[in-house]
Picture 1 (cartoon, rainbow, N blue to C red):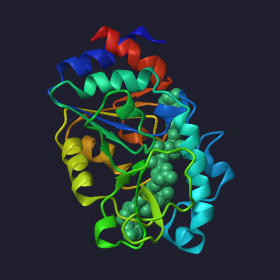
Picture 2: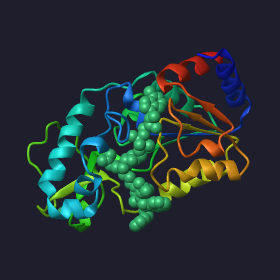
Picture 3: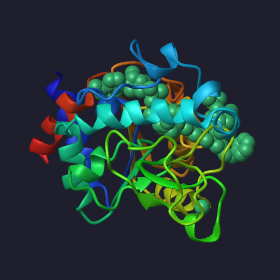
Length: 247
Ligand code: BJW
Ligand code: ZN
């Protein structure tokens, strides 16, 4: 591990009045949560159009729920790693905003209560029919679920996972907060994301356009490379604790 890179990043974070961190599935890889596009990624074995779109759910809600129930069981057996712990500590510092694409809840389990969850939570469900009282997401943490799909407690229709599927809009208020945090920060750090999915992938580009110093922590390169000031080709769970210790 390059001591220079650790010192460089610690110096940038120390000097910044505001830091925005965007995380993706790579942050949870060391915890045992499968990524989407890596070597063992979910999208290597499953087709997103069969499992992660509104059409897929309308066609076969039980199939979609079996997949989410399996993932919920896997995630329930995982614990936050050192990357989550460092980011939870940073998220408590004034001026630090944590934005995540992850639905696994590991940032929150590490203590980062205020993470902006762009793609929802696998631990929330809501009425798929959109009945008035079932529209708000509710926590449902039982694993495995007793009934697939779980029934809406208000209208008895099917509930759906509280995540954002392809072709669905992100919550505009949450995305607005993320965009403001990207456009207004001194330092923007993308950690463990392939930057393949929009609009989340555009946040670093917006930060760069607004004058932030941009950093990527990822063992592999991504489409963000042309917009980076610093590329750290290291696993997050090894690199972030070194930076934290140097702060
Ligand atoms: C490590 C590591 C270690 C490994 N340390 N790193 C503009 C252009 C083109 C397309 C679009 C566009 N705007 C919108 C679209 C369409 C679409 C999209 O982006 N498609 C692209 C694929 C082309 N976007 C949408 O549909 C979004 N909605 C939207 O834009 O609404 C407006 C709209 C409405 C109507 C029509 C069209 C637009 C919604 C996107 C929702 C994404 N949902 C998912 C599933 C969530 C639920 C679930 O979990 O089941 O979100 S897909 C999946 O990808 C998941 C993730 O959050 C997301 C991002 O993945 P992430 O986190 O980057 O993971 P990986 O696996 O890809 O990468 C892991 C990385 O970690 C790798 O780089 C590794 O190297 C690295 N790594 N170990 C550090 N130890
Ligand atoms: Zn309902």
